[in-house]
Length: 123
Length: 224
Image (cartoon, rainbow over all chains, first blue to last red; front, top):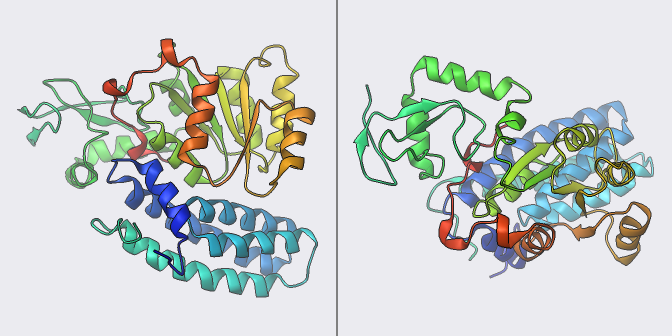
């Protein structure tokens, strides 16, 4: 099953890691949203301060955590933003807005997945 | 006194609170007075219910435990029979996944959130295996690897560098040859790659439990 937020193949890998642990995915997505909200805040601050290094680091962390929860579209967006930030591209606010918009979509789904009884939506 | 049904042995008792359980959870936890098993591996709803109804004193102890640096390390180093894995990453998701995915292995898992903290813990604890991100705050994960491999005290630590940014053969070879890593994994972490790294570098036959002896996991209470 294809999903516009989560990559189905990556989600299958995630489910394999979870094994028979029913609380794995709900707790994982809870951690993801907690950390993601913090990172969006860091991206916002870095964009406002034109802090390229800070923006790249925050993008890098969100790219990693997104890919680890199968949110590949968000991960790709963050990687592209990280590269641009390392090149000192003067587009940080634009990248921050694009990442934030996609993150809101992922976080919305993640919160639903974090609620008991819904982890199997994609499998 | 609140009475619990132990999820493991079924006995009804009031439990007892211990600072650290056998799962080396990072907070005071409840263990069954009957069988002695902690409730770390109990269903999430059970644990949530426990903390919702816990006394103010116990909640205060939990907050204190979560705020004190170093306790986690101390708790995870008192069973020398278990191999130790140090996870160095600034992404909490990675710590969560490694902790939970390896819950059936009898290993101690220690966490560091930047390269400098990873270096300090590696020198102090000399873990059997280090899983480190390549790009880390304060000290690059690959430089961390090279520093540990250049130190006679830590050169025998097996080190796996992980990256979702530096992908491909070029970076793999660089990690292995220039930074002296023992292996290189691309993120996202897969079960196959994680288990392969653990089984490759740790002495499974003598140090890891067979699947039938699966132990409760403490990862449900992983805190930062």
